[in-house]
Image (cartoon, rainbow, N blue to C red; front, side):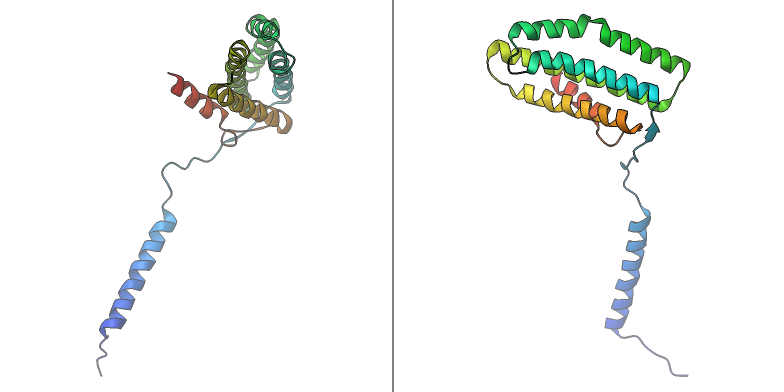
Length: 183
């Protein structure tokens, strides 16, 4: 029997091919460590309806401050009503009662998003008041406008579709980052 010897180029090609195959198989099976799949949660009809009412109330307060014809006095009044008016508090109380009686992960998550949206609106309204009282815009106003819009749009879409997707809008993450930057 005749012994076949591999030539150096052929041996090198086989070695490269084996290394590439091994590397490809390792790459295919390993996942990035920070990859988190978004969680899709169902939101009840009750919470969706309450969410829409809550968003309408927030919009009413913002409009009193943000509209072109709004004055500093109307903005002051809107901020005072925002903080003291019973409409938002009553809505929050109703949502809390619902969550107590019918606990649901989707409803809890949506309630948290609505609270974050309310906080983002509050920061935005204070920036509008600053703008109206000092007659100049600030970078901060545009940051809070973007944050309030993102949260409001997320809450509205969830109310319409009934599915809470914690990876879609990242409102709560953006708000946490905003607060971290403020401190």
